[in-house]
Length: 370
Image (cartoon, rainbow, N blue to C red; front, top):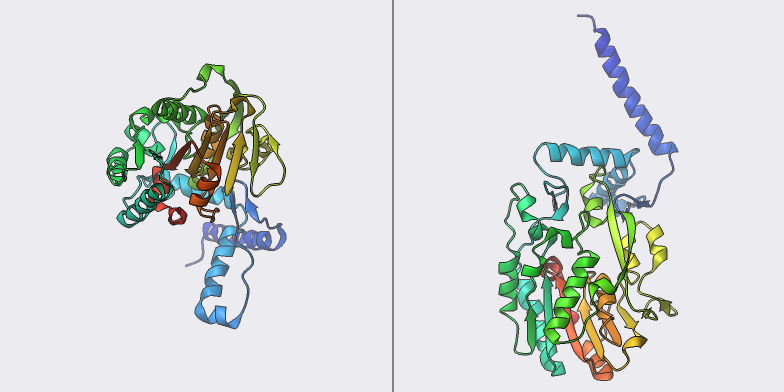
C-alpha cells in the first residue's frame, strides 16, 4: 500500500517540530529565573561518573530539559488549562473557584507538628513569665469554600483552629477571628495572603482584645497598585486569569523601618522599588527578614510589641505600628537567637504569635522559639 499524502505531511510536520525544538534548545538564550512561575530554573547538571551511575545525572537532565524547553510558559499554561477543562482543576495544591479565585487546597492535620509547635509556644510563655497572644488565620480556600466544586477534602479550618487552641497553656491567650474572616474578599484572588483590608481587620480586632486604641480605617490614605499576580497565580499556571489590585494604606507619617539584613534606615513601611519586581508583595516591609523593627515616633510611650510571625505579618506590621511606639517582627525561619533573651533585653508590652493556619501546620522552625 502506497503511503498517503497526509502521512507524508504528518511525518514532515512532526520531524519539523522536533527540529525546531532542537534548534530552540541550542540557539535560544537560557534564563535563570521564570518571571511567570516566580522561581529559579534548573542549572546545567554536573557530569560525573558517580552521578551517572546513581541515576542522579539523568534525572537532573530531565529536569533541566523541562525547565528550559522553548516556549515553556505556553506549554505549562496549556497543560494547566487541559487539566482544568478535564475536571482535574489545576496544580496539585491549587483549586479554582467559580468566581475565578485561585486558592490552596484544604490544610491537612499534622498531629506531630501541632504537638511540637504548641509545646514550644507554651514553654516560651512560661519561660518569659508573660502572657503571649496567639492568632491563627484561616485560609483563603475556607473563606471561598462555597465557590469550589468538589474539593477532594473538605475545609475544616474552624475545627482545626479550635483543636489547636485547646492545647494552649495558661499563659497563652488564643484569639479566634475565624468568624471575622469568613469573607473571601479579605483575601487576594491570585495569592494566599490576606489583603490590606484583611490585615487591617485583624489589627483592629487585636487592639480591641487588648483594650488599646487603634487607628480608624477611614483615616488611612489608600493607593491602588494594579496588575498584582501572587503566589497561587504562579503555581497554578493559569496565565489567562487577570491580575488584581494591591492596596497600600498609609497612616502615620515619620515611621521608619530597619532590619538585620539591610543597612540603613528606611523611611515609611512601603518599599516602593519592589513594585517594579516580579513579587510585588515584598513592597510590604521589604518581604521576609529575620528581624524587622518598625518605629513610630508619634506613639512615644505607647509601648513595644513583639510579633513572632510568617509572611502574613509583612502587611499586618504596618497597621500594628499605628498603636505602638515600636513593633519588632521576628521570623523564626531566619532568626536563631533565643527570643527569651530579646524579651529580657527589651521588655515588650505585648507579645503576639501570628501564623496562617497552613503555615502553622507545616512550619518546622517554631522549634527555635525559646
